Image (cartoon, rainbow, N blue to C red; front, side, top):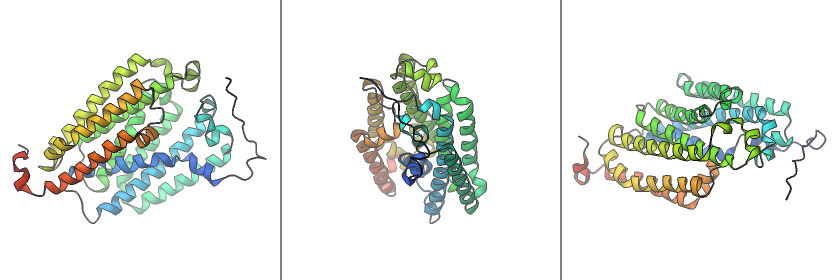
Length: 317
């Protein structure tokens, strides 16, 4: 079976530029991770107020716009390599459905919208977003060509989302939570690299840094980062979350956290998946169910912690 090259659209076929292609450029399927990461600090308990919802909405929207700018810039920089990838070759810029000038104009418009939104909110707190954009510009032109550094930079973007969420609502920043999110993000990025190794000789042409990875090495690092992520999560609930909420939440959610984590490792290591982390996490029923049960336990624990007579024995010491 032969694989044919994707047909690149010329200007005559792209005269009717579809809005859908511009929307696909900003990866709407990736937006839920901004909602989850930015609002994660709220699970510590006792931080809700009447200002919480608008502040968190501002933070999520700001990071979503900034991430959209980064996606367009990355696709512009990677368009030649993306044409060598069996899936990414269908992206709007790589396939030619969106021309380079149009993509640049789209990125400029999104940048202006991001700046305007930052000015509408507590803009001095928006420095994590600025750091994210600068870091990703460096990633697009330099850092993504260095093995290991590439996955660390991607993971830093998620840690910055958590920092913005804490700053936006005045929540004390938990180092444990940042550690958990960072380690989990490194784990997921490594899982993506592992799946890309299955492309064979085309892998190095698409992403040259894959020369610095091997399946045994990636498998070991995935397990190590998974352990660090669990320790960070436990440290956050045990030490930084409001008590007795944290103690009870640690007991009730850990089984579901471990199951969801192990299921993801199973997908990556045993089934060879994980190439599209967002799709994997959102479409695998077992991962979704474990996440829903975990959040359900957090909600139940929040109510339970309000009754000291029921959880008095779990007060932190």
